[in-house]
Length: 130
Picture 1 (cartoon, rainbow, N blue to C red):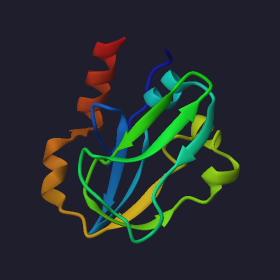
Picture 2 (picture 1 turned 60 degrees about the vertical axis):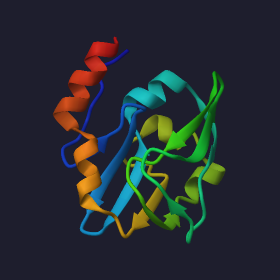
Picture 3 (picture 1 turned 135 degrees about the horizontal axis):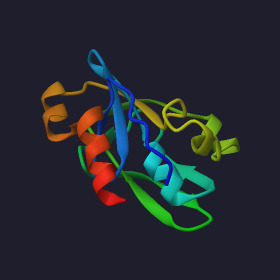
Picture 4 (picture 1 turned 30 degrees about the vertical axis):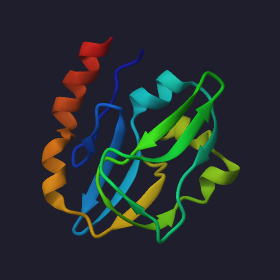
């Protein structure tokens, strides 16, 4: 696989979801490594605004030509926005995994970030998988 980028300010799970916190809100998506491993993404199912998600529990699904996988919450919170672009263009995740977010949440507990990997640790983690 190509070198996996991991932008600063993002935190990652071992299952390759990312979260970018901003105050008491956050944006969630999947990493470059995940989209490469999945291949061509054909469907994404994420919760609608108002739904609460819990750290490390499933909050949706992603399907590619290769597989269907659960999406796991990197952090807890209440969904404030779902990315409507994913309904008509789920493959946009393949081209821009760090710009193509899945959901935005509010009410985050920043102490949950301590259970995640920062960009440099995630890059080391992915290097160990290849």
